[in-house]
Image (tube, rainbow over all chains, first blue to last red; front, side):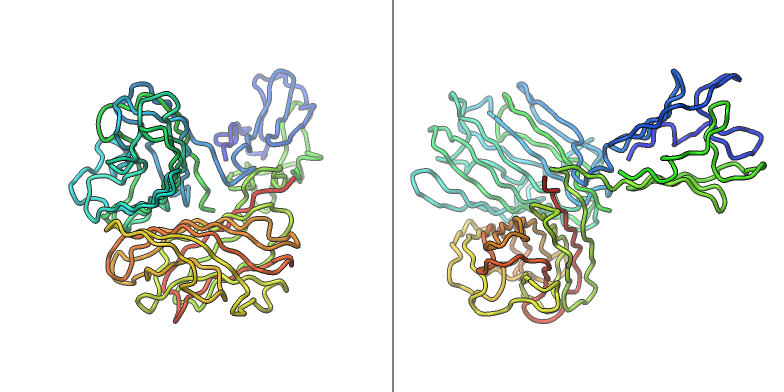
Length: 233
Length: 230
């Protein structure tokens, strides 16, 4: 919740318990109180507004990032305010054909992202429109794979060869191994519709406060990423 | 939204909002806010109470922590919410390898359905060695599966996290749910579970419980969010 004026209300110095609206010595009485998701008390040109846009729901849109020939897309400032983060991505396409989308985490708010050879483990199930179902996985990797099998079901650069999906990042501020789930759909480098599900783990009992998306090679040519927080309390 | 004191605030003639009453009102000293905003002035307060979530909003409806608990129960599910999202983090069983399950109730939690064919499921799993497999017939159907054939571990750093959606439980229809789970199992592998399951009875569900296949739940943090119906 954002409490606009209420974080530092103007109080009358005489100690008589009055909250002041507006400024100057000749104020007229506050005339209107209106409110729906916000409450606004109006006094002529002056007002106090209590912004309750976040209090209305537990799922909060935090920020949006658009990739445009970007080496990475990152979200920082993850905190215990949120029990889980949800990242929706849409129309993501790599700059380099036959590459895969992956994620990494940070414990220094994005100054660096953990990329050691055994920092992560992950398991993947993907189902191709041809009817094939396959798995991939790695017990020790430098990222968590999100889309792509590093083979015949990778992301492509052709028309409509884009991917969309959801990442669930569980309670990253807890000092324990950090888990993620992803569910995604994409048209691979042969323009075949493929569904992919991932369970991943950051193998360190540390407070994760940032997350980064990268391609296995080259840039993220395009795509939109939206970060949502699911409130803890 | 309910605007308690704000519906008829005590206003001074020069545009000041008064807190409390009397001729010598002390200065307001504390302002706190979560879902409510409270301005405290000694024994007097002004409170804004926000109860007016709108259709489509997600609202935190339940919160619970397991501490060597036999089960966690969540009652009061209602048609106020069209879908519930259950988020489980740091599930650790007291007995190594014990899975977690859900069961549903139609009598407010007085009893939970546990017949051997009360539920259904269909899903698949994968481990970090690249092995995948379908789930179909591995378990009896007395539970909604929170875990699959891979068994959650209880050694250091072994636990499960999951997000499940329970769709419109108040409808007189089969309850349907989806569940995504990442588990560090009892062999130290990172495994994925994606499953669709539900209750095979066309009766409104008004409570659910999360419990362990064997002993107690050593730890689990659970939050349930409801999406406000129209």
